[in-house]
Length: 75
Image 1 (cartoon, rainbow, N blue to C red):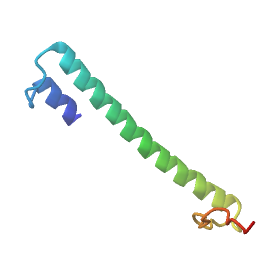
Image 2 (cartoon, one colour; image 1 turned 90 degrees about the vertical axis):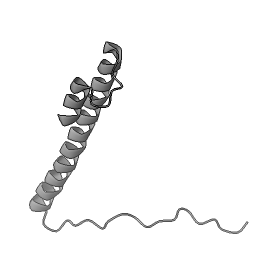
Image 3 (cartoon, helix red, strand yellow; image 1 turned 90 degrees about the horizontal axis):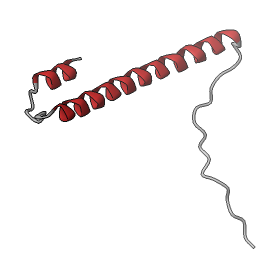
Image 4 (cartoon, rainbow, N blue to C red; image 1 turned 30 degrees about the horizontal axis):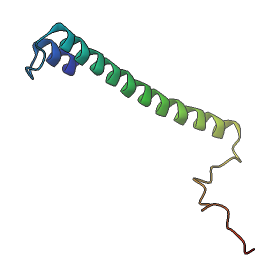
């Protein structure tokens, strides 16, 4: 919200025309939306993992696979 107010107040001095201000507002709102969705996604993933662990107590994650790929054999 502070960044939007900075655009309105033209604190950087680079919003001379309405088109410039509009572009800055659009960029700030996109960034805010991106931040909100990243936060939501992280929370949703944690919630789903917790719920799955509660439903199936024997289930556990093994972490990321450590495979280096398919090893080529001699010809």
